[in-house]
Length: 443
Ligand code: UGA
Image 1 (cartoon, rainbow, N blue to C red):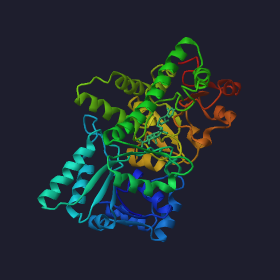
Image 2: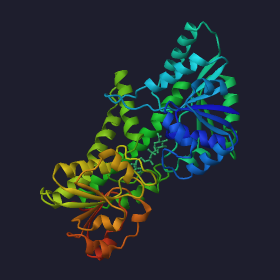
Image 3: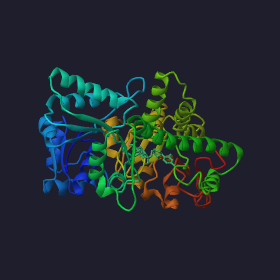
Image 4: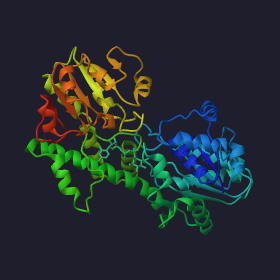
């Protein structure tokens, strides 16, 4: 089938590449000429395991094309995906200007019926706004062309985006049209094997499903982070508690890992956006507000530990930092807990020597060159001349470090672990002091 995807960001590029990889004929449209030129040269704007080879091979075979020419993309296919960004507004609500701009462009150039599919994470009611926009442009053009607006939220995770897209656990489609249902079934048939993963529903429910999923996951995390605070104060070990509750199938083992807070481009933004949506309809979303504020506090936990360890005197101290990205297998620094830590350390006159397997360029881009930030090439060199070690991201390379070397390298033999990567007894056996999250003791 022919498909057009507007927006070559995270969601758009991965979806386009995966659709092309199963044989669909995909045109990607973006307003950023530079991005389009780079993709034609094989330069992929994001780091995502498995993405580069499928972009390269499908581009080479002509099934995946990139252009800034919107009219060409609109003429190409009946199915038009909108996968542009919905950044938070000043008040936290999702800004729809890019989504509505694409809707306007499609309506301006379309000369045949279209199925316009919202892939971006958009608040409930957006499909109606997109529909109104398309309708008004068509009426000023004095044209009567059929169109359907569909909600098809994306559930991929960064770092596993390609495999999530290739093997989705569900494909949610919001539509009331039989024709759309048939077309979407055919489009997604290659990903809908073994059992039916397609869930059809009305548009508003599909839109809310996306937010409900992310808010539920964020709630699980904030709940566990709150439990970890209690565990610390009560002398319990949250890792035991986690295993104890996860074995109940109704709770499950997924997404109950306590840590130094959730980050990324989705959870913080989506929780905030749903709170704003609730405000707009004058509903006080108390639980979601608490999820947000618990996370906000949790992101300060690592700093508080460092601050308390040095009795509030951080001037001139150097903190070794392992992990900068908001989670492993990505270079994404959006809302990363490491940022809260570093910014608070800098405020207190401390220096940071950091290592991350992928996110150092991105960190440099975010903060520029500063003399209180050293980005170094290995996890070992991050510790040279450092006072203590803090871990913000659970990259695989940090799993089994040489604890003796850590002890030798640091001025103070202290490991503050924001992701509970180690067993306290093992670390302590090497003569280090260890502070995890919710592990019965704190500073
Ligand atoms: C999230 C969802 O998991 C995806 O299903 C969704 O499609 C995506 O948002 C989206 O809306 O686009 P992502 O932001 O890539 O995916 O990352 P996650 O793996 O969900 O992790 C988010 C944050 O939660 C990370 O900072 C991670 O460290 C933290 N986390 C996760 C915990 O602190 N504890 C856990 O148990 C799990």
